[in-house]
Image (tube, rainbow, N blue to C red; front, side, top):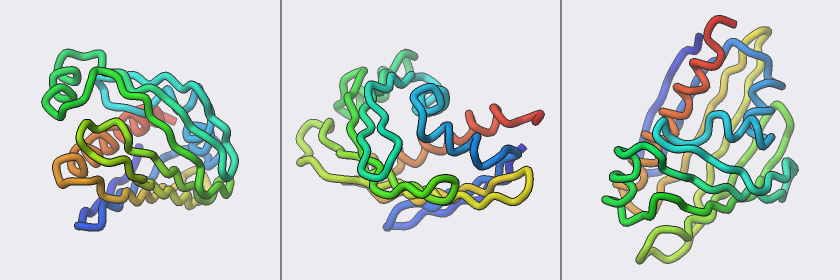
Length: 165
């Protein structure tokens, strides 16, 4: 079970969830191949991690692959192929406290490459962890809204994972 809070602004979004789990388990889902692949991406896609160097400055390289017809169509409408190679780095890495992933957005046709960060703060409290995620905006409002929608869906997958614990 989790509790949910969230807000958006021109500067991005802050999304807060509280999960019934230990900080170590939630951290593992962000910092290991199996963990990351188990929840990252939308319901209609899958992620294949090629590299994950869980340390400050470490690389993260994964493939985001749409598999459901609706996701394939949505990506096509946004001018994206069914699969995108995504590169990021762990810009900050404080185990069980905070991590910052800086993604290189270089896969959008007609858009000059840029960086986008996702900062995640973990607040353990007994058998629960409050996770506060701050997502920077993307190059336009449509991509920002999509990014936030996909990330919120990912958090719903995490919530289902921890139900019943």
